[in-house]
Image 1: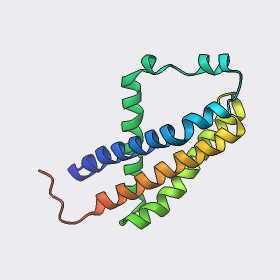
Image 2: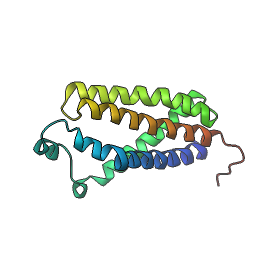
Image 3: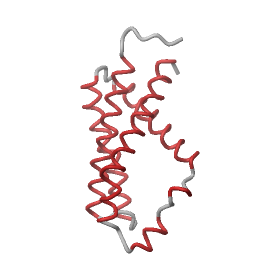
Length: 145
């Protein structure tokens, strides 16, 4: 593992986390409330309250996703922001399609509408994060001390 890969994975983690947080804060939070998968009591049991979140697990999932995106961009050979968008959109929408369709098919976590909106937001976050990862992995004149 090179310093460039570690640096890129770290920044990809931050970018992906911020994009997902923005999507949740401005789109998904209200959308989930207006398109619940079940009664309010059920949804309250399903999701943790903000003060009950398990912080280390949230950090672990963010770091894991950031480095997964970086690894995929490295393996894809994407060398520019635009090629990262291309490969990132393919991987992002296939990955989140698999996750969201699977969860929708087998549980009561999503309504159909919220599943599709989550797919779009998550897929876009991964796409943009992948573009940054491709660009950072191949950026010239970067020094890593």
